[in-house]
Image 1: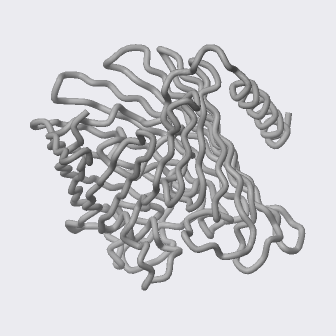
Image 2: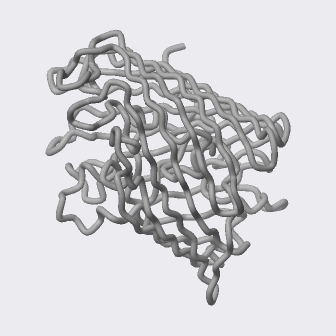
Image 3: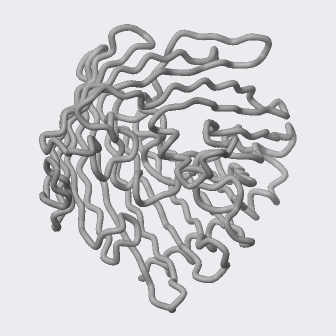
Length: 383
């Protein structure tokens, strides 16, 4: 079965099950939020702060990263958030205001740092949206059997990791997170429980990583999640025109993540992405990648995580270089107190071409070895 035959089958099944759920009139499905990327770990708790029905949360995330190649431009290549080499850097400082829909709610995430510079790289430098991660209103009618609709700017449903470092296992993000999927969308997002274990959703958005669209077309998103006691399986499909000033040559992405939780101390995930886009000359560009990771909570204060992945970009569609990339990451985490984490991480990136800078020489090496230490302080809403 080809990738897009699988996509067609998934979308057909999702449409049928969603229609069935809407037609049910007896047993209400459980109250379920809109499907999100399968988190690599349970979000860490922190000190609480809630005022008048509005929850406040936030964090400050900074790091120092040593790059053994000593690149003259002081940038770690093929990284998205931990970009700066051999110096201290602010990854992200963020504050969140939110109110769960009852039936109306909202969420606003604002901040600054290297992460936001990367996330909003396609927005104009003068854009008012460059310091906003999410800003949307929510509607959850009490008699709609768990149906929820969000409108505004929200993070993508694709991927196994998220923008917030504390909610991932590793300090750095995977190649798939950096090069295979979008960061955010602007438009409409819906979700509805189909059964007690299946949630389906539909999205109609401007496109990939832009609040103001770069063409007149729209991107369609279809999401599905199967949740069981020992695993969660997410499938996401996005399709639409992404080229500026034209609606020709649609981009298609299928993303799937299997998160396995055999017990409270050991967890695993597998993540696969495939994307293709028709070029204006009718040729086809594509990429695909696979990642796997494991996390073990050794004590109440210390955890260990490993990640390995492979990414193939045969036309240089995503990385701007024809290559295959792979990486291995080993991360140790120490929780000092509630609301304060330290992560020490070793990562080795490898390409089948000389793409990494060594000293003042660009494209001089196939390897990049880094060691980083990150500090994350955060507080969370009262629940």
